[in-house]
Image 1: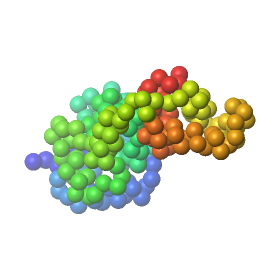
Image 2 (image 1 turned 90 degrees about the vertical axis):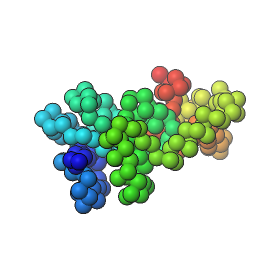
Image 3 (image 1 turned 180 degrees about the horizontal axis):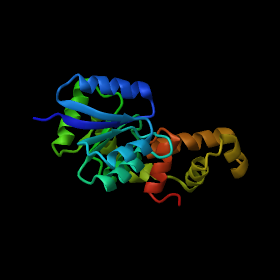
Image 4 (image 1 turned 60 degrees about the vertical axis):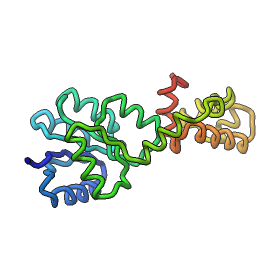
Length: 209
């Protein structure tokens, strides 16, 4: 069986080096190229066709989903997977909607990473267990409990515009402590832990335009 040909994309060289070494030590895999900039990866894909594109989510100039979207135009048959620290359900849903073949967290064990790549190469969709659990719990949560109040929606819109707690407090004529309470409730109800995840959730659920 020929080795699975992989292209890696991550803006941290130490991660690229580590992944390349890990995978190249196994004869089942062949890291044909690695890039710290997505545009260089796209240029490579214009002339070469690997089996799998494995990319980080956070990249310079475009995120991993944008890279996969453009890469799929160039190489429709190529498999593509995200290896990311982002585990927010909204980000994962967008990735699945785009048609990624895998969503793996960076805390993945070596053996699981190799198994995931093999399954993705074989045509299966692979999502890290932690993400699957989050998606399951969110989909089964009580909609009434998780619904945002009008006040929380107003705070959410200001948060997504990168306003600080002080700026939000001044805009809404409330205390910073109240803003912090709203912020905690918003992140809890949306099952997000970062601004990136919250923005993705807001767009995915048409809470902001």
